[in-house]
Length: 289
Image 1 (tube, rainbow, N blue to C red):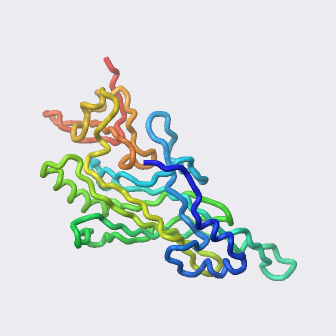
Image 2: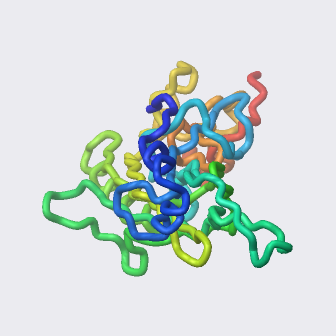
């Protein structure tokens, strides 16, 4: 699902505060108001034939993703996760001061150094019951990022793993149980709450929360292909790579398990034709003859 790109009220409010005052406020803990650091949107990445390789633009994409889909039924669950592509903005205006004395070089005071993202996962589950995450893999964690300087008024993009393979494991078990009980493409809603964290001068700075829902499903991205020639391969069927001459269903360019239709194929199989080794997305090597 997409929505048009737009600005939030946070930027208007932030710039209405005198700069000297705002600098002191920026390092305070603010639960839901502007702090000078903001997650604007989840960047939209094109997929399918002709799509570029995994590259997240540093400026706002015309479309933004407002919810995600994660197929937990891929063969390699150790590599099954969900990636979030936040566009992060420094809402502060330039505030240049002297480092020490009139002869010292100027130093930008409102530069933010990105540190990490804080992630909290909430699963829509049985009423009054918390989702049973595995021991040693909670639903709340930090994801470190490489040090990035975010200039006043500037933006940058990151790739953040907001649902880890160890979080996928109990989701897989739960949804597989529903699938084995006869439910087609069972799904559960995972609401991810994300905060960007950084340093402003000598103090910490944290963005307001950004809520992003992800539908974790069992096989839903491996079915429903518009191309009639691929319909025979709806999940749980897996074609042989030697039977494919083309594959327009490549999934997300950075992570095939999410958001876009995905067609996998088998590179080896047993005597009964059951897939032994599966690659996702599938790489066709058939001749069509």
